[in-house]
Image (tube, rainbow, N blue to C red):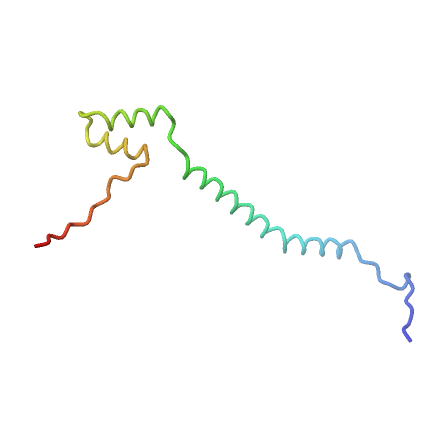
Length: 98
């Protein structure tokens, strides 16, 4: 049959062994949690910056520049950039049919 072991016969875990077990668990689990948290934070701020709308006064100024007939090309480019309008799109050449 199985021998019974009394509690007095079991070796007690030393303070160093307990500390070592906690340190190993911490080293194993904490870095991935920190990495995931940092990735979520970076993703959030990237999303917020990418989807930020221009302030109303800048948008109003940009629209008035685009409506103006005597605005310079540089001012029109700035206004288009401020509103997020893509202006460098090239249309494909139309083929001439005979």
